[in-house]
Length: 179
Image (cartoon, rainbow, N blue to C red; front, side, top):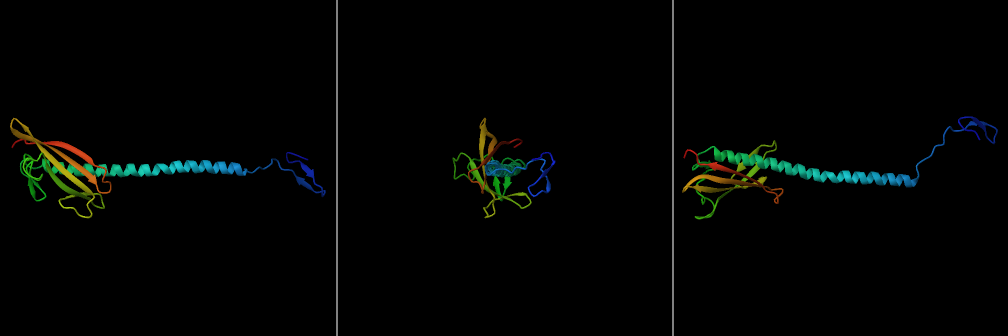
C-alpha cells in the first residue's frame, strides 16, 4: 500500500497511482440535517414578508389619510368661518346643528368619500361611488368664549374601505378671526 502518490503494485501486475487523499461523501443524516436547517431558515425568512406587506399597506393608508385631511382642512381654512363653500353646500363652522340631525346636536357631521387615481392623486367626493377608497367623516364643534363662537374644533376620521377596522383621526382648531 502506497500513499502520497507513490506507485503501488496491483494484483494484475500493473502499476497504478494511489490517491493523494481519500474522497469522502456526505452521509444521508448530514444531508437531512442540512436540508432541515435550510428549510427552517427559509420558513423564518418567508414569515417576515406578510408583516412587511401589512406595514407597507398601513403606511400607504396613513399617507393617503394625511393627504385627505390636509385637503379638507385646507378647504375649511381658505374661506370665511361662517360661509364655507363645501361641495355645493355652505358650511357655517359656528352652527353645530347644520347636518347633525336637528337643533341641539353637539356637532355637525359631514360624510365624504375619497378616491385615489391610478397615478396617486387624491380626490374628495360628496357621494359614494363603488370606486371610493376611503370614507371620510368630518365633525366640527363650535367653541363658545365670552358668549361668542370664536373657533371650532374640527376633526376628520378617515377609514380605508379595504381595512374598515383601521381609522385615522386628525384634529385642528379653525378660528373665527376677523369675522
